Image (cartoon, rainbow, N blue to C red; front, top):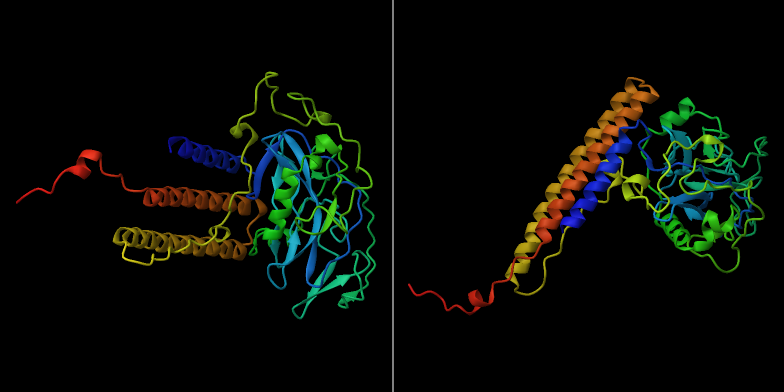
Length: 389
């Protein structure tokens, strides 16, 4: 139990240290060397109406110290009218920082990265919503018009053929968010859907997806549906976007971008050095609601008492969730009315993430205490006859 609490404390301290650097609130991982270039591949055929393309990207596994490719795929939007803002890597504070993607009513900033197939650095040219239905731009998407009729054709001139996969730093994309993209960051967001998480988890487990193995040319570059890495429609990368030359262990990144001091040859990076692995919740609305336990059947009064205690705790915690969410939404509204600057918005988001993480840490400890079974009576206590009065 002590080790588990210590591990959670390390995660919390790491997240709080990230917040103190001034990075975007969505940042969850920092790496001393940049990701490989985006591989060259063709988009698989859209499997069915209502699916939206989410491009592939390079993720990072701190446990192995390597990037791995998460294949592009087609997924249904979580809500009508929502579009996907891809994740991106950006140079800031002496490291490459990862900014998680999200769903929202407007496309936000994704580093100016040209992911292709409608995501050419700013906005999305691959389709649009109309009367509750998604229409596909055939000029940038692979659509079978026999099965999908809601299409249109608008030629998109893409003058950016750069395969660089990160923003800023030496050789990175030099792009800044527009006013509209900054406004989009303040809108309601939805985290990646289950299909996207399945795609990422499958890629993380596949050794062939690691950059050190495929040299920037993954054998599975895109899939028709998430989590299916075999069968018809799976696309291989035709080539790497550029030669991949990762730094030697403990050495500086190519181009002198790395600021991390060299480690002794046999030293293994700690979790704190490689930072937090999964995107941390930014707002109370990003955290799943608390489940209310169901009372057991039968006459187990002790079990019923414990369930009632958990119900009361979950109800109280959900109320705290709702209160914090309302407060954070009011903060967004106030900042929008004041036409806050990007720096002010980032400071507010850092405060929101700190509030959310502290609340979740407290709730987790409370849930663990309630779930802890009562100590069993000792042998002598169990055998002791009842006291006579």
